[in-house]
View 1: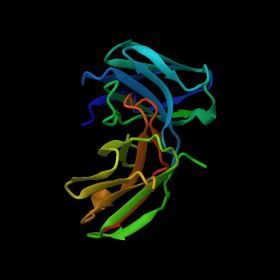
View 2: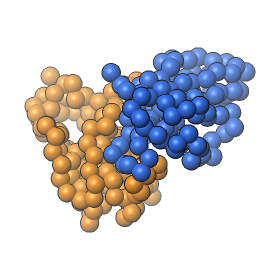
View 3: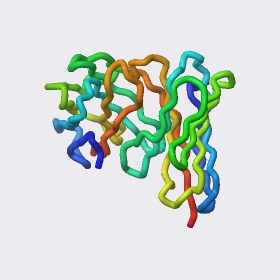
Length: 113
Length: 112
């Protein structure tokens, strides 16, 4: 079983809805990431939190809003999404200053209708 | 030119074959090299991690890095149908690991 847990596994939402994706890890990692992955494409970095502070924001549209309430939790708030935002959203974590690779969650498959 | 190039495949091999997966890159600052395996509709799983040049072996998997040629490889010995997945190379320059660049992924099918 993955040590990074993402919920929900699947989400269908309308373009006017507000929803949130959740990610939790208990490995003591202090860097957490949101990636977006379209079918047959590599993951694309969206946001990085290091020690609960937003470290990298890759010019993602404001309809995506990240939040890191504590060192174990990461949320991604969604509002007024477009159909092209449909994708697999992946959470990952690692130790800052350590590049031994990420631990990814299983992802949330998001469909915007 | 993309920073990381990886042939998307698909690559189809018979069970028991040796599989060779490769990536090339253009950024000479890359020092950390990783291979991830991703099954359909799942998140990537870290398989191998290598720092700088050299070889690393773990069971049936061997990772090679040739920084002079900007070329990395993953070899899978005695391939199994359960190895059928997409294999993503990934690399970064800094120890922070924040800006990891992924290859497009190679889809591998191992036929029983």
